[in-house]
Amino acid sequence: MKQIRITKQLLLLLLLTTTVAYSQSAGNTGLSFLKYGFGARNIAMGDAGTALSNDLTNLFYNPAKLALTDGSEVLFMHNEWIQDVRSEVVGAKTTIFGLPFALGFNVTSVDGIEYREIPGEPITTFNANYFFGSLSTGFFVTDEISMGLSFKYLYEGILNDEATGFGFDFGINYVLPYEGATASIVLKNVGSMNELRNESTKLPAEVRIGTAYTYSLEDTKFDFTGGVEFQKYLDTDDNHFNFGAEVLYNKLIALRAGYQSGFESRGFTTGAGLMWGNLKFDYAFLPFNLGLGSANLFSLQFKF
Image (cartoon, rainbow, N blue to C red; front, side):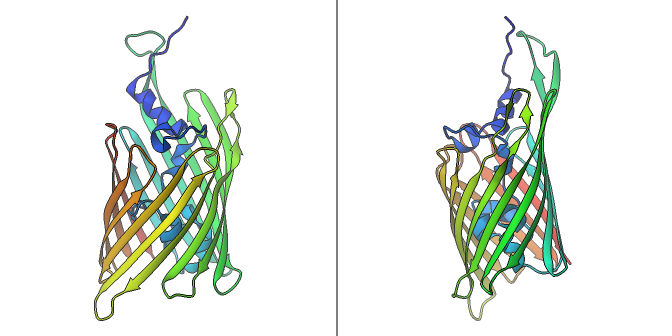
């Protein structure tokens, strides 16, 4: 009988195709790269982006909030995830016929996975590759309530097997009758994949409900933003609370921190941001437990 030896790299592949290390659930969904987040600012604040995102990163968290933005933006993000997992993310937003439209792209890969049929030298190496491309828009239905929709094209390739699929996000945002306060709800990753060899991968469908508040101190140059959201994966036992906060000085430098509950391998997050005119640089740091290492995320954003 042929035996396949599971190497360190193959274990990393499992991080992408199951939710064991990322979510610690008893569920059976895959495509965990869809859970990684978008924009170092949001990730530094506990990935509470449904509540706290305030720019084109809304395309990932809640497309309804795109209606609150103006102008055009582009964003580039590099995600140096745990061990050998890496992601490159690009986003762009503009206004067409009075509506905001945003494009998002995510390429995630694990390189150099060793393949063996018996103990010893590997027969070969292969890569695991994941991709999504999305189109999002948002619009006001009343002066306070906006709605949004995202469509995603999905791809996964492992060794000689490939599969494609699609997903949808639906979001609602409510500008509360208190200055600086908002509330949001979003249903994400509703869709399906074609079969990958013998079985199709189930998307990590989830619901997030969150609220955020921004307060500016009078006679100072400080702005404070805080938010919390509840996150529920529909096909697993995962329930999480994501908390995030930001202190912004003079619209120039920001310090951020967050916490995510319900994860065995992660909890606190932190990061910083620098703004110079229409250019913004953000950094996020995510320490992991269980010997998994740490993740470093960098994003560069320009508004015009």
